[in-house]
Length: 219
Image 1: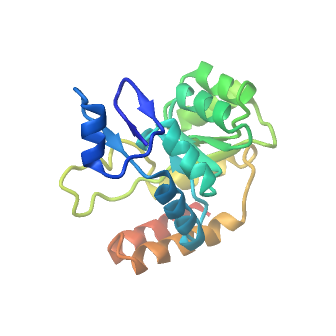
Image 2: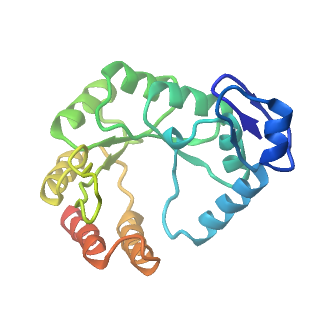
């Protein structure tokens, strides 16, 4: 597929040269292979040891989402009401997780009542209180406490934007216990995730240990 900010086509092209010659675009064009994206999704879902959610904000292009769905993706991380509405319209059976840690009250209520969202992220007591106020203590409610991670060697420090430190996260979990749908498999999944990250060099050992430390304190 190929597209610009204004339009998208499922037309197949042999290479980038054919795209340029055929479309002669005035704006930047992005291209992707739906079959390759589907294959990569299948591979990742097979090898990754935990729950896989696709962050829609990374690329909300419908053609990309359809390819991921064809590859087996069923869980979607949505950060806005618009993303939630789009995913629910495209995939009625998808599991949608509302993963923006600071949500408007109306957005929480609409996600729960209109779009069937059952999982919400939080990293503060204020957000927990807001979710409780709009939804109540429904037994089907799933709450995800977002952990803060250390900056590490990153050039730009974005670690302080969102996330609770392990001690604060543990307090949030304790405060949320009467509301959440507790999944005992989450403990084992976090351990497997940390091992997966270290084995593949995605984080140095000390950062993975920080993840495990937060897991132990939280549970």
